[in-house]
Structure formats: C-alpha cells, structure tokens
Image (cartoon, rainbow, N blue to C red):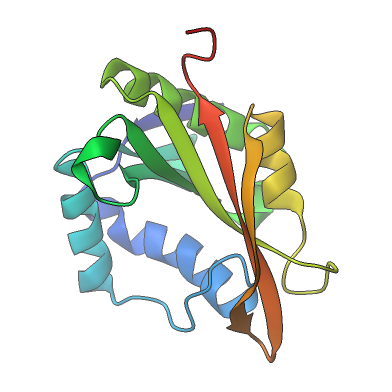
Length: 173
C-alpha cells in the first residue's frame, strides 16, 4: 500500500539512488552525471523552503518522489510551478505515480499555485534511452502539450527534443 509523506534529509541517499538510475541509464534526465549526496541533501533543503518535496513509500520503503519549484523564476510567475516526478523503475505502472502527483497537486493548490509545468525529454523516435512514457503519463494526469523544442538535448551520442506540458489547476475560471 502506498503512502505519501514529506521528504526528509535522511531520504537523500534513497532519492539519489532513484534519480541516479535515470541519469546513468536514460535520457529522461539531461544530466550527464548524478549529483553528490551533499548536493542532493541541499536540493531537499532548498526546495522545501517554498515548495513541497514529497516521497512515495510502499510498506515504509521509498519507491518514488516528486517536488515542485519556481517556473522561470520571475516574480510575475508566482502562481505557476514546475513539477518533477521520479519513480523507481521496478515500481512503474503500479499506480504510485498517480498517487504521488495527486498529493503534490493538492499541496500546490493549497499554496495558491494555479498552473503546473513539466519539462520532459521527448524522442523523435523512441529508443533504448528515451520513450514517450513520461509525456503520456502527464497527459493521463491532465497535462497538455504547451510547446516543443527540437534537438535541444544531446546525450548518449544522439539528439533529443524536449516538451513542456501544462496543467491548469483552476481550468474553469
């Protein structure tokens, strides 16, 4: 059974393990090298100053995480947020991503955030490093395509596109 809770500094090692897998094995992250443990601890501290950083557990074992941050970083975007999610690959397609994003969205909505944005690596042709699964997941979560950047990320000797997806938390207004 999944539970969602706030991330703590003590979670940094496990969160870094999950994230590092994506850095090393996929083009989901456009990082070439994983951050250090100290850098990841600092990331948790920095995010939690203003935004939620949450983890997904199954029977007390962390299997994923999600967090939010500023969109673009300019004052006028104070009600918009960029969101990020990573699930341990062994836990894909088990409903945890939906639970985690649902909890993140509820917290952001309570904070007054109105627009969510996700920056996603996107292949022109799917390969062993990048599929369209992340974009499809976001679409199932109510995001829509907002823009596409062509061949802007280079990893594993090939070019990848990047898409921005958007979700309006108050779509009827």
